[in-house]
Length: 260
Image 1 (cartoon, rainbow, N blue to C red):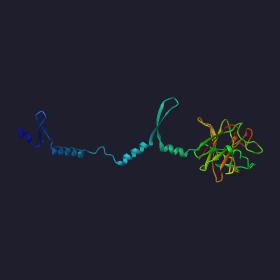
Image 2: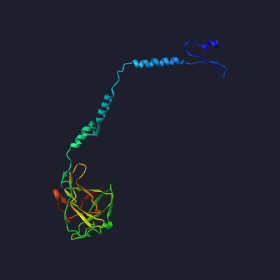
Image 3: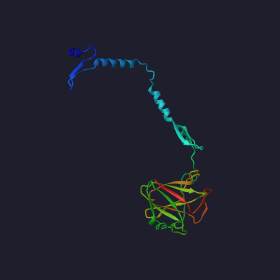
Image 4: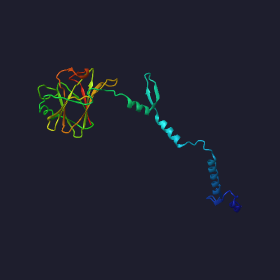
C-alpha cells in the first residue's frame, strides 16, 4: 500500500511520505510543475486572445492631460455667502493679464527730475552722525514730526539721512495719499565725505489710485550711481502748500523706502 501510494496517479504529481513526531504516517502530494506551467500558458493565451478594446494611443492621453492642466477651478465666497467654484483657464488669464492696461498713471515721463537749489556744502554733516544704514531687501518707514532734525541753511527744512550699504543698487520710494494729502519729499545724494552731489526734485514717476484695500500712493524708482554714498530725504517746504497733480503737500505723512 505504501508503494502504491508513493507511485500516485499519472499526471497528479508525486507523494512525499514521512512519519511525524506522534508516529503517524503522513502523505503529502507535491503539485506537478508542468501542470502549473500549462495553466500559466493557458492564462497568457487568454490574455493575448482578448480584444484590445480599451487601448488608447499615447497622443490621446497626452492631450487629455493637457486639457486637465488648462481646466483648473477657483473657489471663492460670493456676495451672498455661498461657496462658488468655477473653471479657470490659466492661459486665458495670463493673456488677459499681459494685455491689461496698467493701473497707474505716469506723472513725470517715467524718470525722476533733477533741480537746482542753493545748498550749503556742510548742510548735512551733522545728520550723518545719526544716519540709519539700509541694506538690500530692507524697508524703512519715514515720518516727519516737530522733533525731526533739520538741514543747515537759510530755512530749517526737516530731513533724515540714510547710509546705503555698498550692495544697494536701486531705491524704491512711495508716498501715501490720504484725502489728497501726501509728503512731497525731495532727495539729496551725498558722497563719501557727506558733500552734496545730486538733488532730485520729483522722485515719483507713477500715481496709483486708491482701492478698497489700500490708500493711493506715488511711487518712484531711483538708480544709484557711483559716488553716491548717503541719501538725505527732506521736505522742501515749511508749511502745507499745493503740490503737483492737484495734491496737497503736507508736513505729516508716511514715506516707504525700499532698497534693492
